[in-house]
Image (cartoon, rainbow, N blue to C red; front, side, top):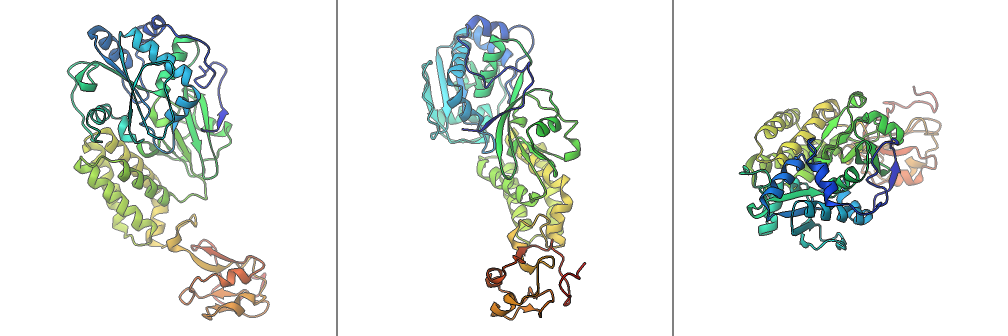
Amino acid sequence: MLKETQATASQVRRILSPCSGGLSPEAVKGLLTKGDAFYTKYGTDLSAVFADAAQRGGGVLVLNLAGDDDRSPLNAHLAESQQEKLELAVKAVAEAAGIQEVYVVKPPELAYQPQAIDVKTIDAARCAVLREEYTLYHLMETGELRSCPMEKDFPSQGYQNRPTILADAETFCRIYEAAASDGAPSKLVVIKDAKESCLTEVKTGTPVAALLSECGFEAEKGVLAGGVLGEYIPAGDLAQRTIENTADWDSIRVYGKQDCLAQEALQLAQEAKQDSCGKCVLCREGTWHFLGYTKDITGGKAKKEDLAMLLDIAPLIRIGAFCSFGQKMARAIGSLAEHNRAELEAHITKKTCPAGVCSAFSKLVIDPAKCTGCGDCLDVCEEDAITGKKKFIHMIDADMCENCGECQKACEEGAVVMQDGTIRVPKKLVRVGKFK
């Protein structure tokens, strides 16, 4: 379960509030046919789909609990914490559209057992590719994860080419609140930095900078909104960007000075490679290249042209990938690399990690601010890699050092540290306290 925190205005519909009673099919029908389009957070016009499915009859309803990524397990959280509200909304939508057959697609590890609705359950590993509706339908029919975009012959065409109403847990909970109460709509957001994470509910239209400030997060290096299918946003743009009711705001990863954005690019590439169905050439080859380039950058093996190539292929994949998964994963990786080019270039040209995170660039050094010139480290170094004398700042020869760590153990002042070049050290012996 996610840790919940409050960052809400008084007029926000409380998706996370306790269930306040039943929901009539008439209320749902009024909401979805009142004239204003009601969209799922994955971009589907649910109003048009609902009206078409109700008119055609013989349709199905699918509750998709398998489309999350690791940064924002919102479906699992709502299925566990808001089960009554979720099922009342599913039941009311189905009855309003005359649907008798309901499916739930869920990860096998999710211990969700429907109570108020009669459903057919299909297990599917949690994967962001399953936000693609025809990919989801193909998996439901064949058990195979494969991107299968296609043109619809009618608005609600879906599972087995039947009229299909498809939505996620957050959208159904939002339907419940919108049909049952008045007030401004809200969005659930998982906010996370290197140390902690929380789930909050916020009024749509709220500036991102204001939300982060209210929740106690400082985005010194910007944020990644939406995870592997999202977008990197620089710190200077956060006041102009607002929270909207889309999956792009399911999560906000906040980056501080301690975060290495080359490592973050590598993590995104690993997730994209793992989640890709591999059927589209651009996505399959693109995720392979992204992973290779970011591994080399963080491993100290990259060349300057590697970063240029990464930035060149990202927009090409965004244009030509078969489905929105390929397009959006290229946006996430490409935007992070583009806006943090200098930090990634430091890994390539200076062979250093500015955040001191990448182990490929790490070496033992003696911090001049902490060294007392005691000689304890010098005495235990079997490689004679340390130079020094009493009351002078000691120095480690990186070429001779084997990184055994014995000098770290011997130094009571904690002056011997593993770092990647961010600590400036003297090039010749200097008296303790005299190095500037």
